[in-house]
Image 1 (spheres, rainbow, N blue to C red):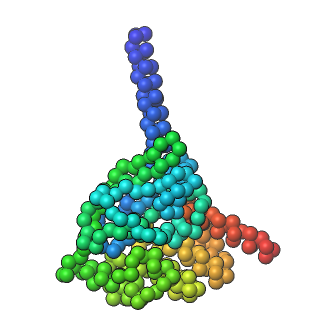
Image 2: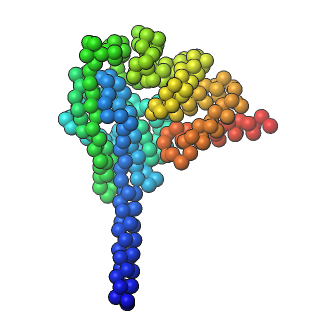
Image 3: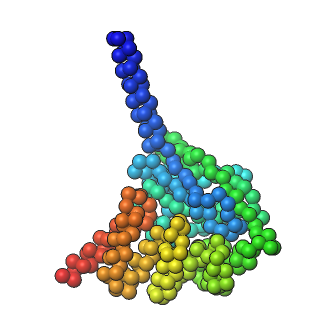
Length: 279
């Protein structure tokens, strides 16, 4: 009986040790994921990277407070020069944000002809590099008889960050009118909102952002669009509506450590200060 009890306790102790080791390993894991596996040529490739613990990631690949982030891609793809962060990622600047979203299409010149690539996120930091598990992405160029061929052909000013402040030929505006069911429509609505907001055409921006939130709730940039709504209402001095929208979004992103969550908290503090100043 004594020997049996000793073995039982040893088993429990070993289990606790292994569990602790697994937990420690999880804390040192660089998480890397993507919401889809197949992309159209010219479609943004939105991925999420999460640093372990309270680590910090830069808004764009490169050196940041928590180390240097890079992406390892096989077969190799040439990087784009002067690539920009996604809009809200850029707004957080050097803030300590442990979960970031990146558009690989912005940072790398994937060939239009398509193909399949294996991608890993790597965080070089003191003590050694953290390398994520790989993900596989496939890009396909729509054939002549594909319903996405014309929408893709319309988006010819790439990368998409070009549409943030420049309308160009009205590519994104034409796409949502002519091909509202295209896979690219959700991106176009978002960047139409960004363009209108930057032009201070807030009603137009609100219409585009609300289309994203209501029609594409699972879109990776839906929360970004929801925060755009908050910003536009605030800019229009509709403070009560901005506060309400910000609270709703705060509840939705509660517990997350991304750029939107950080901006929502900052907006909440700003709205509170402004409310106090009026009393």
